[in-house]
Length: 257
Image (cartoon, rainbow, N blue to C red; front, side, top):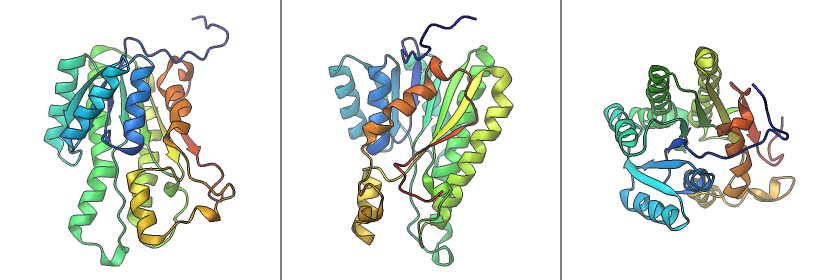
């Protein structure tokens, strides 16, 4: 195998990507970024009208995309969504597990319904999606890239009302490491991105509840989703062919190490 100088191609021509939680925030940006790099993108989420709007925007920018309505808490819906994306676009070679929800509840006051919803969205769903995509790649003998969207909350508990969210993201990191080891022989790279505080609908809701806390950060700002483009493209492109089982922290120095 030979590598060009520099070995940093982000050309995703011929790749098929599935992005969950694509109706807003980071997921929406991820979908547009992958499409701009040449991938055909299946955008998944619960709000069908927003998916159709996103598909239209990607196509207007010269990309290719299809919408796949999906609630990642539903195991049967995951099977159907993967099958629909594959039928419309071809074998999924890139998966971005982005769908996630906060808990915003004190642990001892949390209902079982909230517990199941957060676990189902942040951990069970990503596991089922990763194994569904991984299974098809292994069957076809194709390499692939899986990127799980974690959080700096996996390493640092921000305060009360974030316990379960932190637990699920820490588990997602371990899932990333474990699947990377299991699938290394199959040339399926599994990595994760742990963003700090970035502008999104989820973050807007948190600020509405607790107030603006960005003044406590060293640079007194939150991130723009565009500032994750380079990390995402690195992890899904040929440039990171030797990188698997890694969690990349992207937080602007906001949180203590």
